[in-house]
Image (cartoon, rainbow, N blue to C red):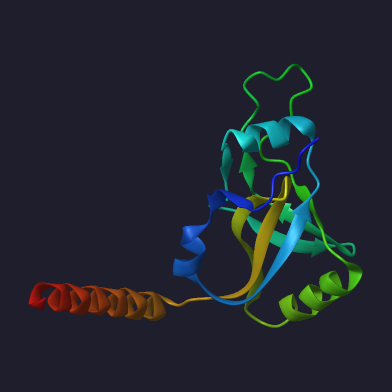
Length: 154
């Protein structure tokens, strides 16, 4: 059996960059069933409302939606179920220590295949306030206008 190298993006949580200051990122594996992997190969995933949490010394991905496999049978998976994140003990302890701080949470930013395995990128994040979001939008708009002006001068 030939292994595929590299990575292929399945889903990205672009909303996370808008709603949070992303501080620290970590890669984790996901414990999945066979029909979930087949559905992911078809690109059926959404991370929009997802978050990660530490429960009983284990890390869980909550709220991620992996659509049902179209050609599945009666033992197909539930799309909204909680999925276990595969991390080392010291990584879980480190994340738990960071999340206990006021205002920090764990947000999934990307879901992708890496060497044939499904991985999720988890970011330790601090929520943005409305004024921060407005400032970011203004900075992006100003940057875009500067690039247009430079392009027009050439």
